[in-house]
Image (cartoon, rainbow, N blue to C red; front, side, top):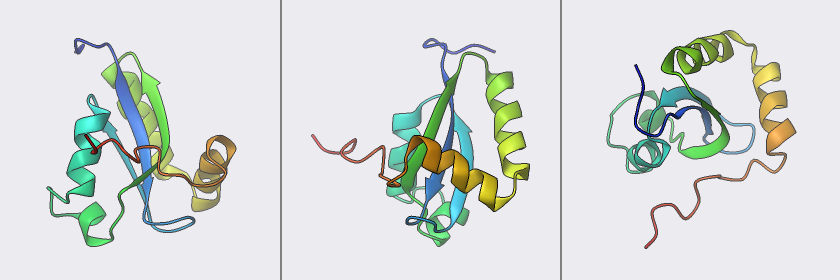
Length: 101
C-alpha cells in the first residue's frame, strides 16, 4: 500500500507537558490533527483532551509506520518521555497554527 505523497506519520500527542500521551499513525497528519483538535472521533484522545502534537516522524511505507507505532505503544512511559524531550524539550505543540487561515 502506497499513498500519493509516499509519507506516513507516526505521532505522539499529549494533553500537556508530561501529561496523558496518545500514539497514532496516519497518512495525512494535518487532517488527523484537525480531527484530534476538533474532537471529531469520540474516544481516548477526546475524552482526555489529548490534542497537542509533541512528536512526529515520517515513514515511506505504511508497514514501517504501523510497526513503529506498535513498538512505541509497548515502550514504558519513561522511554516515551525521553523520545519526546530529545526532539521537543519544551513540549511545544508542533501543529500550533495549522487550523488558522
